[in-house]
Image (tube, rainbow, N blue to C red):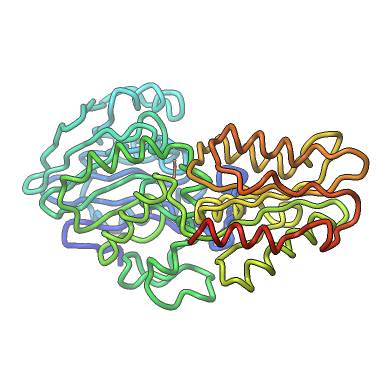
Length: 401
Ligand code: FEO
């Protein structure tokens, strides 16, 4: 049931109960917490799962072990979605030797109270399970400082931690030959295609700040022969390894596709009308775009598409002589994620004094974005005369050409 190969078994779980990952990111398709057993003369468990799934997870391990014990527990990453069952595994398998790096040790003590029988590894160190060799490579800040990956050379398999992971529980299978995106109605085509939006939302929301360290990790891994990626979230990648690696490379370089992510917030609908007018003008010119209302949608979708397209258009009315807070918070998140290489356009209404467009442009300037224009700040109600979005769409189209 959990067989990936003769030596690799899947023992992870699907989470279709949690509504917000890390307490804030919506999970419309759930999420999986992946964990793997490598079985040779000795056995190694790679990461664990989230605390709420203890019974199912421990049963998955017992079933695959079929009476054997666990010799090693490799900790690639200490975020509690993968580490909160370490103490329970230790309780059930008291002889298990924990394999971790020096940065993991204090975090392991702090979260799980585990301090003994730990084999501390450095970059490039290996352990042998018999005819299987696991080698550890440090990949700090992908996504925490203690993060490492585990390479199983004989099977050209990378246990990558969060890297190459995705939101979305697994339906029907584990690998990209047979997995589906749970609850998705448009999962036709390749599994990678079905997961791509949720992978980008996961990347942009969770790992997006760490583009530089993801790039360093990709460089470190580039010399390895990788036929299979076993991430901690989402499908096991076999058919799609090159696509997935190329996509992560693109995301971590902040390289957007040609197109516009329109993100707006509105109190009484005037900035919203301006946003929709821009969308209509882009549509008529065949310019790809996405549009998100920060007052009705979770900001995670706006981040997702801000990482997709190379142009960002942000609308906010002036509020308390400042940027309307939903748009301010969005721009704060863009800045915190160190997003770069974007064109930028700001727009928004005001009643007695305009401030939001000027301040949005200043935030964009601090991100190093190129302004399409000085923006459109318009008084009171929206009208076509006040907001020449046709001219803006012409400029954007010319810039994308
Ligand atoms: Fe899935 Fe950074 O933990």
